[in-house]
Image (cartoon, rainbow, N blue to C red):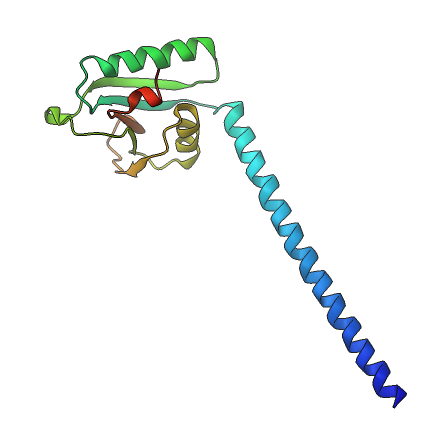
Length: 152
């Protein structure tokens, strides 16, 4: 009878040990995720190495807004050397279709690192993918009615 008690207590100890190991593995995994996310944010804050080619499109119809936002970005770039924006052109959207309520980033070339940098820099969260290998710019920023939220 005492033998079966020892076997039972050994199996309970083994189960407890297994639970502790699983718990520690999960804890280590979550710590890794938190630390890895922090490194990505620090890398973005440190500035992107290279340049990001963008175009600014007036999608809201306010006269001269693409040019005004270009000046805001260039002035900010002069003040902070880490903003590596190459503004290729600024103009109205095609056919003067001023229908954009919200400002949006259009991704022309697939580069997630540059996209994250641009989103962090401008604060714009909306994005759509319209890949075009022939496009000169890597991203378009279409300025909607809410452009002042991002460029003031």
